[in-house]
Amino acid sequence: MKVKLVMIGKTDLDYIKSGIAEYEKRLSFYIPFSSIVIQDIKNTKKLNENQQKQKEGELILDQIKDGDYIVLLDEKGKEYSSVEFSGFVEKQMIAGTKNLVFIIGGPYGFSEDVYSRAKSKLALSKMTFSHQMVRLIFMEQLYRAMTIIRGEPYHHQ
Image 1 (cartoon, rainbow, N blue to C red):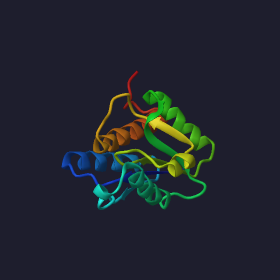
Image 2: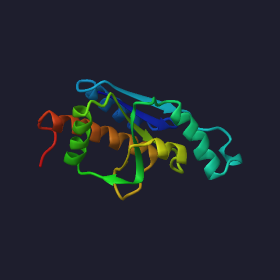
Image 3: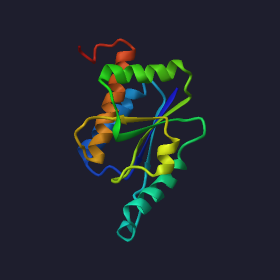
Image 4: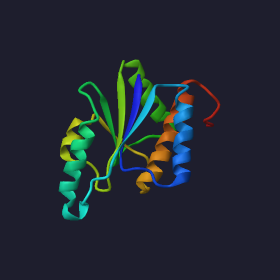
């Protein structure tokens, strides 16, 4: 199974870039992993919230294929413990999912077209995090899931 993370907007903060790079490197020992950064929409001041979500949605949908299993990182998504999330990932592996794609949207969420394409929604917490922090937190949790699946001592219960 391949895992891909699609994100709107670049990561500006060096310490977050460094953390993301570290977890990308760690993940490469477990699964084929890639990340795609979609550039921020230009001239958003001329767009209302729905127009911005629509434009971002078109760019997101360009990055996914018909057979991809899409999971949106969304505040209204299902919350998992780390062990439960590892079970979700392992279930996708066992089911023969070829491409598991996680998507972090823009500041207003996702367009209806993107929501209708998704198979699942995932919330990292009831708390709100910056989009940049979400990237790092998610990467760490994906890495943690891989170590749990392999029975490695990274995660403690």
